[in-house]
Amino acid sequence: MTTTGSGGDDVSKCTNGATADREIVISRTIAAPRELVFEAFTEVRHLARWWGPNGFSTTTRSFDFRPGGVWDFVMHGPDGTDHQEWITWREIVPPERITMLHGSSRDDPDAFESYLSFAAVGEGTRVVMRTVFPTKELRDTAAEKYHAVEGGEQTLGNLASYVVELVRDEDRPDSPTTR
Image (tube, rainbow, N blue to C red; front, side):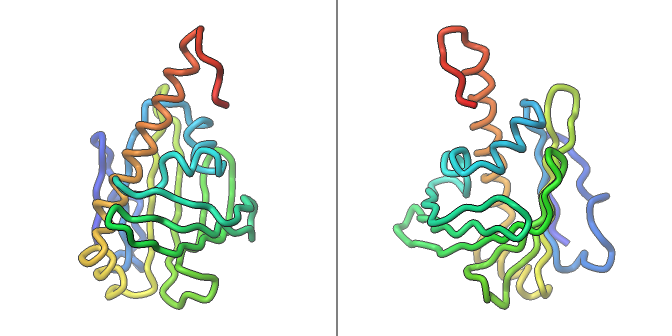
């Protein structure tokens, strides 16, 4: 099992013994209200501003945020490589959790499940992203070849930076609200 945490979070309790050798768990505590963090994860206007590891950008082809809906997008790597991505939303419980299937296309046999939870922690939010791959080998490939742990940490870091900036903008009396 590969786990990591940011901000002193204990993520080991989020794993499932039956899938431990196939999962990656990453968490981060973000200094922003849970509703705002959830919104940034669920509205395409926000996702385009922070989604992906450092140096990546995202172009959305279609976005339908509802159970059974699809997000079809391309991640553009810093080296110029385009990565076709596809997510179908399986469960949405605002502002608590999201379950999704993530792959390169609707028929991707290597698609993986991601379980996201959003917990209020004081005035902040603890996000836990638990990704379960179909096999241990696919998990290992994602971690070793595609640097999934580092990429996940960077993605949650980008989310944190983005929503903290939204909070700052909302607190400035001369700045229009972004929400």
